[in-house]
Length: 451
Image (cartoon, rainbow, N blue to C red; front, top):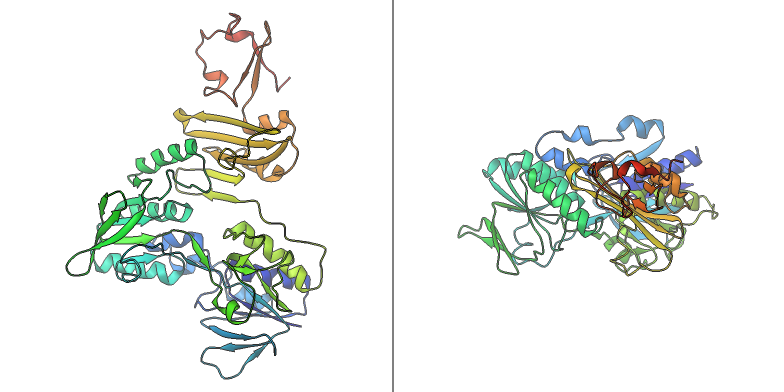
Protein backbone atom coordinates (compact mmCIF):
# COMPACT_ATOMS: atom_id res chain seq x y z
CA UNK A 1 0.00 0.00 0.00
CA UNK A 2 1.32 3.42 -0.95
CA UNK A 3 0.71 6.24 1.53
CA UNK A 4 1.52 9.80 0.50
CA UNK A 5 1.80 12.56 3.10
CA UNK A 6 1.70 16.23 2.10
CA UNK A 7 3.71 18.23 4.65
CA UNK A 8 6.78 17.39 6.73
CA UNK A 9 6.11 19.32 9.91
CA UNK A 10 5.57 17.55 13.20
CA UNK A 11 2.12 16.18 12.21
CA UNK A 12 3.21 14.80 8.84
CA UNK A 13 6.55 13.44 10.04
CA UNK A 14 5.12 11.75 13.13
CA UNK A 15 2.36 10.23 11.01
CA UNK A 16 5.07 8.66 8.83
CA UNK A 17 7.01 7.57 11.92
CA UNK A 18 3.96 5.92 13.48
CA UNK A 19 2.95 4.21 10.24
CA UNK A 20 6.39 2.69 9.89
CA UNK A 21 6.28 1.44 13.49
CA UNK A 22 2.97 -0.29 12.75
CA UNK A 23 3.88 -1.76 9.36
CA UNK A 24 7.39 -2.43 8.00
CA UNK A 25 6.19 -3.00 4.43
CA UNK A 26 4.21 0.16 3.67
CA UNK A 27 5.45 2.49 0.97
CA UNK A 28 5.58 5.89 2.67
CA UNK A 29 6.27 9.08 0.72
CA UNK A 30 6.40 12.64 2.03
CA UNK A 31 6.11 15.73 -0.17
CA UNK A 32 7.19 19.02 1.44
CA UNK A 33 7.06 22.52 0.04
CA UNK A 34 9.97 23.65 2.23
CA UNK A 35 13.56 22.88 1.36
CA UNK A 36 14.43 21.45 4.79
CA UNK A 37 13.70 18.12 6.50
CA UNK A 38 11.63 18.10 9.70
CA UNK A 39 12.94 20.75 12.12
CA UNK A 40 11.99 22.46 15.38
CA UNK A 41 9.87 25.53 14.76
CA UNK A 42 9.94 26.55 18.43
CA UNK A 43 13.67 27.23 18.12
CA UNK A 44 13.30 29.53 15.11
CA UNK A 45 13.78 32.73 17.18
CA UNK A 46 17.28 31.51 18.14
CA UNK A 47 18.16 31.38 14.45
CA UNK A 48 17.64 35.13 14.13
CA UNK A 49 20.34 36.14 16.61
CA UNK A 50 22.62 33.31 15.47
CA UNK A 51 22.57 31.33 18.71
CA UNK A 52 21.77 28.42 16.39
CA UNK A 53 22.19 27.74 12.69
CA UNK A 54 19.58 25.96 10.60
CA UNK A 55 21.39 22.60 10.89
CA UNK A 56 20.95 22.82 14.68
CA UNK A 57 17.18 22.93 14.16
CA UNK A 58 16.97 19.76 12.05
CA UNK A 59 15.50 16.93 14.16
CA UNK A 60 15.37 14.05 11.67
CA UNK A 61 18.35 14.11 9.34
CA UNK A 62 18.77 12.11 6.10
CA UNK A 63 19.88 8.95 7.93
CA UNK A 64 16.56 8.76 9.78
CA UNK A 65 14.56 8.72 6.54
CA UNK A 66 16.86 6.09 5.04
CA UNK A 67 16.81 3.80 8.09
CA UNK A 68 13.00 3.99 8.23
CA UNK A 69 12.61 3.53 4.48
CA UNK A 70 10.62 6.75 4.13
CA UNK A 71 10.99 8.71 0.89
CA UNK A 72 11.04 12.47 1.36
CA UNK A 73 10.81 14.96 -1.51
CA UNK A 74 11.65 18.53 -0.51
CA UNK A 75 10.89 21.78 -2.33
CA UNK A 76 7.91 20.13 -4.06
CA UNK A 77 4.55 21.87 -4.17
CA UNK A 78 1.45 19.74 -4.62
CA UNK A 79 -0.76 21.86 -6.87
CA UNK A 80 -3.83 19.63 -7.14
CA UNK A 81 -5.40 16.47 -5.76
CA UNK A 82 -7.23 14.32 -8.28
CA UNK A 83 -9.31 12.43 -5.72
CA UNK A 84 -11.30 10.56 -8.37
CA UNK A 85 -8.21 8.90 -9.88
CA UNK A 86 -6.23 9.10 -6.60
CA UNK A 87 -3.32 11.05 -8.04
CA UNK A 88 -1.39 14.20 -7.17
CA UNK A 89 -0.20 16.91 -9.55
CA UNK A 90 3.19 18.33 -8.55
CA UNK A 91 4.23 21.80 -9.72
CA UNK A 92 6.75 21.61 -12.56
CA UNK A 93 6.31 17.86 -13.08
CA UNK A 94 4.34 16.18 -15.85
CA UNK A 95 4.00 12.77 -14.22
CA UNK A 96 1.21 12.43 -11.68
CA UNK A 97 1.89 10.75 -8.33
CA UNK A 98 -0.53 7.90 -7.45
CA UNK A 99 -1.59 7.12 -3.89
CA UNK A 100 -3.68 4.53 -2.08
CA UNK A 101 -4.12 6.67 1.02
CA UNK A 102 -3.43 10.39 1.28
CA UNK A 103 -2.68 12.43 4.41
CA UNK A 104 -2.90 16.22 4.36
CA UNK A 105 -0.54 17.73 6.93
CA UNK A 106 -0.39 21.13 5.26
CA UNK A 107 -0.06 23.05 8.52
CA UNK A 108 -0.86 26.71 8.86
CA UNK A 109 0.30 30.20 8.01
CA UNK A 110 0.71 33.20 10.34
CA UNK A 111 -2.40 35.35 10.64
CA UNK A 112 -2.06 38.97 9.57
CA UNK A 113 -4.57 41.18 11.41
CA UNK A 114 -6.40 43.96 9.59
CA UNK A 115 -3.69 46.59 10.04
CA UNK A 116 -3.22 49.40 7.52
CA UNK A 117 -0.01 48.93 5.46
CA UNK A 118 0.76 45.52 7.01
CA UNK A 119 0.31 43.40 3.89
CA UNK A 120 1.92 45.88 1.51
CA UNK A 121 5.06 46.06 3.72
CA UNK A 122 5.47 42.31 4.20
CA UNK A 123 9.10 41.42 3.52
CA UNK A 124 10.11 45.09 3.60
CA UNK A 125 10.16 45.87 7.29
CA UNK A 126 7.12 43.82 8.31
CA UNK A 127 7.68 40.09 8.87
CA UNK A 128 6.09 36.96 10.28
CA UNK A 129 8.06 34.00 11.63
CA UNK A 130 6.90 30.54 10.62
CA UNK A 131 9.82 28.81 8.93
CA UNK A 132 13.60 28.82 8.48
CA UNK A 133 13.46 31.08 5.44
CA UNK A 134 11.47 33.67 7.45
CA UNK A 135 14.11 33.61 10.21
CA UNK A 136 16.95 34.10 7.73
CA UNK A 137 15.05 36.92 6.02
CA UNK A 138 14.52 38.70 9.37
CA UNK A 139 18.17 38.21 10.33
CA UNK A 140 19.40 39.70 7.04
CA UNK A 141 17.00 42.66 7.24
CA UNK A 142 18.31 43.52 10.74
CA UNK A 143 21.92 43.39 9.55
CA UNK A 144 21.41 45.27 6.29
CA UNK A 145 19.24 48.08 7.63
CA UNK A 146 20.88 49.02 10.93
CA UNK A 147 17.73 48.15 12.85
CA UNK A 148 17.55 49.61 16.37
CA UNK A 149 13.90 49.36 17.42
CA UNK A 150 11.55 46.40 16.93
CA UNK A 151 7.85 46.04 17.72
CA UNK A 152 6.38 42.55 18.08
CA UNK A 153 2.62 42.41 17.60
CA UNK A 154 1.31 39.49 19.66
CA UNK A 155 2.03 38.57 23.28
CA UNK A 156 1.47 34.83 22.95
CA UNK A 157 4.05 32.08 23.41
CA UNK A 158 5.84 32.62 20.09
CA UNK A 159 5.68 36.39 20.43
CA UNK A 160 7.39 36.32 23.83
CA UNK A 161 10.01 33.77 22.75
CA UNK A 162 10.74 35.96 19.74
CA UNK A 163 10.89 39.11 21.88
CA UNK A 164 13.54 37.56 24.14
CA UNK A 165 15.76 36.63 21.21
CA UNK A 166 15.32 40.06 19.59
CA UNK A 167 16.24 41.72 22.89
CA UNK A 168 19.33 39.50 23.10
CA UNK A 169 20.29 41.01 19.75
CA UNK A 170 20.67 44.28 21.73
CA UNK A 171 17.66 45.82 20.03
CA UNK A 172 15.03 48.03 21.65
CA UNK A 173 12.09 45.60 21.91
CA UNK A 174 8.37 46.22 22.54
CA UNK A 175 5.59 43.63 22.71
CA UNK A 176 2.11 44.84 21.77
CA UNK A 177 -0.82 42.69 22.89
CA UNK A 178 -4.50 43.15 22.04
CA UNK A 179 -5.70 41.48 25.28
CA UNK A 180 -5.32 42.97 28.78
CA UNK A 181 -2.70 40.35 29.73
CA UNK A 182 0.15 38.39 28.22
CA UNK A 183 -0.50 34.80 27.17
CA UNK A 184 -4.28 35.32 27.26
CA UNK A 185 -4.90 31.72 26.11
CA UNK A 186 -2.68 30.22 28.80
CA UNK A 187 -2.80 32.46 31.90
CA UNK A 188 -5.24 34.17 34.21
CA UNK A 189 -4.99 37.84 35.20
CA UNK A 190 -2.85 37.29 38.31
CA UNK A 191 -0.22 35.16 36.62
CA UNK A 192 -0.29 37.33 33.50
CA UNK A 193 0.61 40.29 35.70
CA UNK A 194 3.54 38.45 37.26
CA UNK A 195 4.79 37.41 33.82
CA UNK A 196 4.58 40.99 32.54
CA UNK A 197 6.75 42.20 35.41
CA UNK A 198 9.41 39.59 34.68
CA UNK A 199 9.33 40.27 30.94
CA UNK A 200 9.77 44.00 31.57
CA UNK A 201 12.65 43.26 33.96
CA UNK A 202 14.37 41.63 30.98
CA UNK A 203 14.28 45.04 29.31
CA UNK A 204 11.33 44.28 27.03
CA UNK A 205 8.56 46.88 26.98
CA UNK A 206 4.98 45.62 27.11
CA UNK A 207 1.87 47.42 25.83
CA UNK A 208 -1.47 45.77 26.71
CA UNK A 209 -5.04 46.51 25.60
CA UNK A 210 -3.39 47.60 22.38
CA UNK A 211 -5.12 47.11 19.04
CA UNK A 212 -2.64 47.97 16.29
CA UNK A 213 -4.45 50.08 13.74
CA UNK A 214 -1.71 51.16 11.32
CA UNK A 215 1.91 50.60 10.35
CA UNK A 216 3.37 54.11 10.15
CA UNK A 217 5.74 54.84 7.27
CA UNK A 218 8.47 57.40 6.64
CA UNK A 219 8.57 59.49 3.45
CA UNK A 220 10.95 56.95 1.90
CA UNK A 221 8.43 54.14 2.59
CA UNK A 222 10.49 52.64 5.40
CA UNK A 223 8.97 51.65 8.75
CA UNK A 224 8.42 54.48 11.21
CA UNK A 225 6.40 52.65 13.87
CA UNK A 226 2.84 51.69 14.72
CA UNK A 227 -0.32 53.50 15.69
CA UNK A 228 -2.60 51.92 18.28
CA UNK A 229 -6.37 52.41 18.16
CA UNK A 230 -6.41 54.53 21.33
CA UNK A 231 -3.92 56.98 19.80
CA UNK A 232 -0.67 55.64 21.23
CA UNK A 233 2.25 55.58 18.80
CA UNK A 234 5.36 53.43 19.17
CA UNK A 235 8.51 54.05 17.15
CA UNK A 236 10.06 51.09 15.33
CA UNK A 237 12.36 50.26 12.42
CA UNK A 238 10.89 46.80 11.98
CA UNK A 239 7.59 45.07 12.84
CA UNK A 240 7.25 41.35 13.61
CA UNK A 241 3.71 39.95 13.64
CA UNK A 242 2.99 36.86 15.75
CA UNK A 243 -0.78 37.02 16.01
CA UNK A 244 -1.93 33.42 15.70
CA UNK A 245 -2.30 31.04 12.77
CA UNK A 246 -4.59 30.35 9.83
CA UNK A 247 -4.92 26.71 8.68
CA UNK A 248 -3.66 26.05 5.13
CA UNK A 249 -6.73 24.67 3.37
CA UNK A 250 -6.56 25.88 -0.28
CA UNK A 251 -5.41 22.50 -1.59
CA UNK A 252 -8.17 20.75 0.36
CA UNK A 253 -10.86 23.14 -0.89
CA UNK A 254 -9.85 22.59 -4.52
CA UNK A 255 -10.15 18.83 -3.93
CA UNK A 256 -13.76 19.28 -2.72
CA UNK A 257 -12.95 18.41 0.88
CA UNK A 258 -15.25 19.86 3.51
CA UNK A 259 -13.64 22.91 5.07
CA UNK A 260 -14.59 25.67 7.44
CA UNK A 261 -11.75 27.41 9.28
CA UNK A 262 -9.79 24.18 8.79
CA UNK A 263 -10.16 20.86 6.97
CA UNK A 264 -13.10 19.14 8.66
CA UNK A 265 -12.33 15.63 9.94
CA UNK A 266 -14.14 13.00 12.00
CA UNK A 267 -12.87 11.15 15.07
CA UNK A 268 -10.67 8.96 12.86
CA UNK A 269 -9.10 12.01 11.15
CA UNK A 270 -10.94 11.11 7.92
CA UNK A 271 -12.13 13.81 5.54
CA UNK A 272 -15.34 13.53 3.51
CA UNK A 273 -13.39 12.07 0.56
CA UNK A 274 -12.57 8.36 0.68
CA UNK A 275 -8.96 7.49 1.59
CA UNK A 276 -8.03 11.11 2.32
CA UNK A 277 -7.08 12.05 5.88
CA UNK A 278 -5.91 15.28 7.50
CA UNK A 279 -3.82 15.94 10.59
CA UNK A 280 -2.19 18.79 12.52
CA UNK A 281 -2.63 22.55 12.36
CA UNK A 282 -4.69 22.37 9.15
CA UNK A 283 -7.63 20.43 10.65
CA UNK A 284 -10.86 21.37 12.33
CA UNK A 285 -12.42 18.80 14.64
CA UNK A 286 -15.57 19.34 16.66
CA UNK A 287 -15.63 23.01 15.57
CA UNK A 288 -12.17 23.60 17.01
CA UNK A 289 -8.74 24.43 15.59
CA UNK A 290 -5.93 23.12 17.76
CA UNK A 291 -2.63 24.53 16.53
CA UNK A 292 -0.49 23.10 19.36
CA UNK A 293 2.26 20.48 19.31
CA UNK A 294 0.54 18.01 21.71
CA UNK A 295 -2.48 17.91 19.37
CA UNK A 296 -0.27 17.16 16.35
CA UNK A 297 1.32 14.25 18.22
CA UNK A 298 -2.03 12.87 19.41
CA UNK A 299 -3.54 13.11 15.93
CA UNK A 300 -0.50 11.51 14.26
CA UNK A 301 -0.93 8.46 16.49
CA UNK A 302 -4.62 8.08 15.72
CA UNK A 303 -4.42 8.73 11.97
CA UNK A 304 -1.71 6.07 11.56
CA UNK A 305 -3.97 3.46 13.17
CA UNK A 306 -6.98 4.70 11.22
CA UNK A 307 -5.18 4.41 7.86
CA UNK A 308 -4.37 0.78 8.64
CA UNK A 309 -8.00 0.01 9.46
CA UNK A 310 -7.85 0.18 13.26
CA UNK A 311 -11.01 2.01 14.33
CA UNK A 312 -10.66 1.21 18.04
CA UNK A 313 -8.97 4.52 18.85
CA UNK A 314 -10.89 7.77 18.35
CA UNK A 315 -9.71 11.35 18.54
CA UNK A 316 -11.50 13.18 21.33
CA UNK A 317 -9.53 16.41 21.28
CA UNK A 318 -6.31 17.31 23.07
CA UNK A 319 -5.87 18.82 26.51
CA UNK A 320 -4.12 22.16 25.91
CA UNK A 321 -0.59 22.19 27.31
CA UNK A 322 1.90 25.01 26.83
CA UNK A 323 5.35 25.72 28.20
CA UNK A 324 7.32 28.96 28.02
CA UNK A 325 11.07 28.42 28.06
CA UNK A 326 12.50 31.92 28.19
CA UNK A 327 15.72 31.89 30.23
CA UNK A 328 14.93 32.34 33.90
CA UNK A 329 11.21 31.61 33.48
CA UNK A 330 9.57 28.23 34.12
CA UNK A 331 5.94 28.38 33.10
CA UNK A 332 3.52 25.57 32.31
CA UNK A 333 -0.20 25.89 31.61
CA UNK A 334 -2.34 22.80 31.05
CA UNK A 335 -6.07 22.17 30.63
CA UNK A 336 -8.66 24.57 32.04
CA UNK A 337 -6.69 27.35 33.72
CA UNK A 338 -9.36 29.96 34.41
CA UNK A 339 -12.88 28.59 34.93
CA UNK A 340 -14.01 32.06 35.99
CA UNK A 341 -13.39 33.19 32.39
CA UNK A 342 -15.64 30.43 31.09
CA UNK A 343 -18.41 30.86 33.68
CA UNK A 344 -17.66 27.35 34.88
CA UNK A 345 -17.39 28.04 38.59
CA UNK A 346 -20.21 26.37 40.46
CA UNK A 347 -21.07 23.05 42.01
CA UNK A 348 -18.17 20.62 42.07
CA UNK A 349 -15.45 23.10 41.05
CA UNK A 350 -12.53 23.88 43.34
CA UNK A 351 -9.51 26.15 42.91
CA UNK A 352 -6.28 25.78 44.88
CA UNK A 353 -4.10 28.84 44.42
CA UNK A 354 -1.04 30.45 45.93
CA UNK A 355 0.81 33.58 44.82
CA UNK A 356 4.33 34.06 46.18
CA UNK A 357 5.42 37.34 44.60
CA UNK A 358 8.60 37.40 46.65
CA UNK A 359 9.81 34.19 44.98
CA UNK A 360 8.02 34.83 41.66
CA UNK A 361 6.10 31.61 42.19
CA UNK A 362 2.45 31.03 41.23
CA UNK A 363 0.51 27.80 41.58
CA UNK A 364 -3.08 27.31 40.55
CA UNK A 365 -4.82 23.95 40.44
CA UNK A 366 -8.33 23.46 38.99
CA UNK A 367 -10.43 20.53 40.23
CA UNK A 368 -13.96 19.37 39.47
CA UNK A 369 -15.52 16.57 41.47
CA UNK A 370 -11.98 15.61 42.61
CA UNK A 371 -10.80 15.37 38.98
CA UNK A 372 -7.72 17.36 38.02
CA UNK A 373 -8.90 19.63 35.19
CA UNK A 374 -6.02 22.07 34.77
CA UNK A 375 -3.13 23.97 36.28
CA UNK A 376 -0.83 26.96 36.00
CA UNK A 377 2.66 26.44 37.41
CA UNK A 378 4.89 29.51 37.30
CA UNK A 379 8.33 29.24 38.87
CA UNK A 380 7.49 25.66 39.86
CA UNK A 381 8.95 22.63 38.08
CA UNK A 382 8.68 19.86 40.66
CA UNK A 383 4.91 19.44 40.33
CA UNK A 384 4.87 19.19 36.52
CA UNK A 385 5.31 15.37 36.26
CA UNK A 386 2.45 14.80 38.72
CA UNK A 387 0.14 17.22 36.90
CA UNK A 388 0.91 15.73 33.49
CA UNK A 389 0.34 12.20 34.76
CA UNK A 390 -2.95 12.93 36.50
CA UNK A 391 -4.72 15.46 34.28
CA UNK A 392 -8.39 14.45 33.80
CA UNK A 393 -8.01 11.83 36.56
CA UNK A 394 -9.37 11.66 40.08
CA UNK A 395 -6.72 12.68 42.59
CA UNK A 396 -6.32 12.28 46.34
CA UNK A 397 -6.07 15.56 48.21
CA UNK A 398 -3.09 14.37 50.25
CA UNK A 399 -1.06 13.34 47.18
CA UNK A 400 -1.99 16.47 45.26
CA UNK A 401 -0.96 18.80 48.07
CA UNK A 402 2.32 16.97 48.50
CA UNK A 403 3.02 17.33 44.76
CA UNK A 404 2.28 21.07 44.67
CA UNK A 405 3.76 21.70 48.13
CA UNK A 406 0.70 23.55 49.43
CA UNK A 407 -0.64 22.20 52.71
CA UNK A 408 -3.43 22.64 55.24
CA UNK A 409 -2.27 23.44 58.77
CA UNK A 410 -4.67 22.73 61.66
CA UNK A 411 -4.72 24.36 65.06
CA UNK A 412 -4.48 21.73 67.78
CA UNK A 413 -6.41 23.96 70.18
CA UNK A 414 -9.52 25.01 68.21
CA UNK A 415 -9.33 23.08 64.92
CA UNK A 416 -8.98 26.21 62.74
CA UNK A 417 -7.38 25.41 59.36
CA UNK A 418 -4.82 27.59 57.58
CA UNK A 419 -4.94 26.52 53.93
CA UNK A 420 -1.86 27.57 51.96
CA UNK A 421 -3.79 27.01 48.74
CA UNK A 422 -6.25 29.73 49.71
CA UNK A 423 -3.95 32.18 51.47
CA UNK A 424 -1.35 34.54 50.05
CA UNK A 425 1.40 33.59 52.52
CA UNK A 426 2.82 30.12 53.09
CA UNK A 427 2.50 28.95 56.68
CA UNK A 428 6.29 28.84 57.16
CA UNK A 429 6.53 32.49 56.09
CA UNK A 430 4.01 33.75 58.64
CA UNK A 431 5.59 35.98 61.34
CA UNK A 432 6.80 34.18 64.47
CA UNK A 433 4.33 36.14 66.59
CA UNK A 434 1.36 35.22 64.34
CA UNK A 435 -1.67 34.00 66.31
CA UNK A 436 -4.65 31.78 65.54
CA UNK A 437 -8.17 33.21 65.87
CA UNK A 438 -8.30 31.47 69.24
CA UNK A 439 -5.05 33.07 70.36
CA UNK A 440 -2.92 29.96 69.95
CA UNK A 441 0.63 30.46 68.73
CA UNK A 442 2.03 29.25 65.40
CA UNK A 443 3.69 26.30 67.18
CA UNK A 444 0.26 24.88 68.04
CA UNK A 445 -0.41 24.13 64.36
CA UNK A 446 0.35 20.80 62.67
CA UNK A 447 0.44 19.81 59.01
CA UNK A 448 -2.92 18.13 58.41
CA UNK A 449 -1.90 16.53 55.10
CA UNK A 450 1.24 14.78 56.34
CA UNK A 451 -0.32 13.08 59.35
